[in-house]
Image (tube, rainbow, N blue to C red):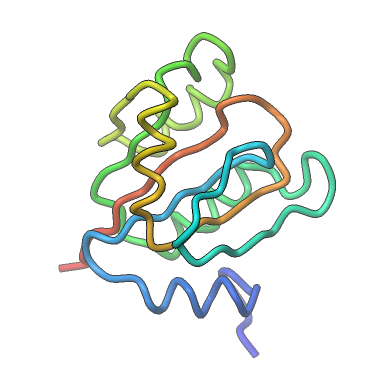
Length: 129
């Protein structure tokens, strides 16, 4: 049994399958989930688990070389915008509709229980060397 890091077996397995350049969409409970990518749905109740907690757990496991979020987050959900800016220095903003289109190319979608608008980010995996 693992003693630290991500403990969810489905998520651990999905993380282990990721490679350089793969996309991981971390999303709130309301984000449309595209057909195609593997999905690990962690949502339990509204707000649980939070977007911040899931993002932090994933960032502890992944090398991230780039990230994309909806530009609307800055105006509508400034707390999440600050969180993203603090955790992801290579963050780029695009219109929400563009983020939804890009999410179809993700290899993995991790759905949280977050119940605030635009709490979504598409991570691009890097390499550790």
